[in-house]
Length: 307
Image (tube, one colour):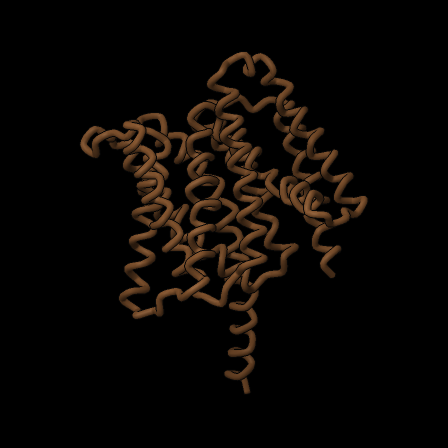
């Protein structure tokens, strides 16, 4: 009897504890990837760094599932994988990595967090009606972004800063389309294997772009700091964090899962200030808080509309 009770308690702890640990892992390490990306692009082209990160991560994923003799995707599943590899990795990850070359890692993380706003706007243009709370949250988030950029008004005179902001915004739009497409076309296919294939395909696209434009550098000219950044991004950003992310999505409620979207930018802003000396002003703190509150309202209203 005692052993049976222990087994029940142990199973409940694993059912609740491990997914929460996975959530905490994602919250912290996806926030730190902005710092690693910022360090990496200091010494090499951003698209090449993103391509190398995704190539190594994709090779590791695919090799594991080939060793396990996992069935390859079939038919229309390939179309879904190809589209997601472009939206979520080649465009979203590639552009966000490129963006932090010109703006702070904390600012890049905050801009990335507003992708739910684009989902709301996209669904609005597709003819769906928005609840009042979503509209209110949209306005609040936009107000928060305006507060954040109050301290950066003079920076907009710098073309590099404007270019970095543009890249970051385009990255969030691509991720929003990718998220909507995933929900609409999600296939009954191993999500981890699919993830590896998406990384591998997107890396080929990014390598082709750097090769065609002549912006790539030789491997022996890449500095040690960039190699360390790539290794960190592969292990913690592309493998362990994504495994934890999919694991928590399958076991936690959407309300709890969405927490990572609010914690990631906070981690990035704090570490960016500590490691790179990026400005941590009152405007960033207040504006970031307002933006995250607005995002919560948008996410909450979207979840309520589905129930």
